[in-house]
Amino acid sequence: MAAHLITGAGSGIGAVLAERLAERGDELWLLARDARRAAELRERFPGARTLVGDLGDPAKLSWAFGHQLPPVELDSLLHVAGVVELGQVGELPVKAWQEQLNVNLVAPAELTRLLLPSLRLVKGHVVFVNSGAGLHAHAEWSAYAASKHGLRALADSLRQEEHANGVRVTSVYPGRTATAMQVKVHQQEGKAYDADRWIDPESVAKAVLAALDASRDAEITDITVRPGR
Image (cartoon, rainbow, N blue to C red; front, side, top):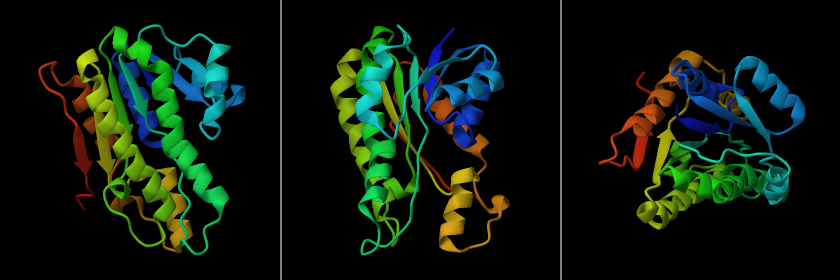
């Protein structure tokens, strides 16, 4: 039975991944920002274990984990959580930059650092659910795209550093996906939202699972998923 730690399991892609891995009978560890959210996740995913840590304050993750019992062995660390705040460079406040960089980049780096010993023990897998914005930046997407471009660099460096330890690293770059985040993006853009136009979270989850299930002779490094409609 494999053990997986997932961020962002409360909705969207993360929730689908948690459901599919639970169906396999795998062991789930779900990161929650506070105790109330942890209780909600345990109720939604019976049998899952939770860790409490606020991705918005990555400097405190080490302290938080020091008061809990993280997994000793971890087959995969799935970074799915993210936040977005659109705005022009000339108008976007520092707070918006800091929040997106913290949640989307610094917290994944710190979480990976803390859990690398558990991943190395079983030659595990780190998956970063990135974004099309991690490959191309557009107007009003500067802070989000910067955080996701940084996440790509983090993954590429980590892959080279951990290759000798047998830890595999994959980046997945979904296009617009029908999640709560996409609803927020449309609100910020002032556009009507139609979920049928965008990628189903299930499709992105399948791409992640394909990377996890690849045989040990192969490492799937980058997957781009685009809307097919």
